[in-house]
Length: 129
Image (cartoon, rainbow, N blue to C red):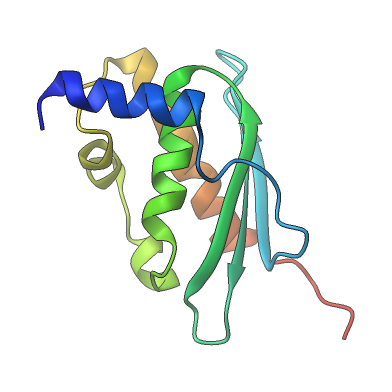
């Protein structure tokens, strides 16, 4: 895909996000923000007993890169094992985006990975059972 097509994908996910909203019930959740630009993001997950991510949603506000990256990342992790998702890194995220980013935009893109990992490592929600 050309970088122009990737840009179109990013704009589409920003304007028409596929996974934006909240899950009524979720097993994991985390919220964080980028204090430099004000981007904010929450990611909620439903992880089953086999450590597979069954559902995921994001919500927040910010620039096109931060919000589109969150939507693309959430789309990519559904159906994947938690340990595999924990192993995702900056290069995986950049491959998903398909365009090169400067240092300022890199922080915008990496917010979604930071929030996702926060939800998996420390965002487990307790149950009342």
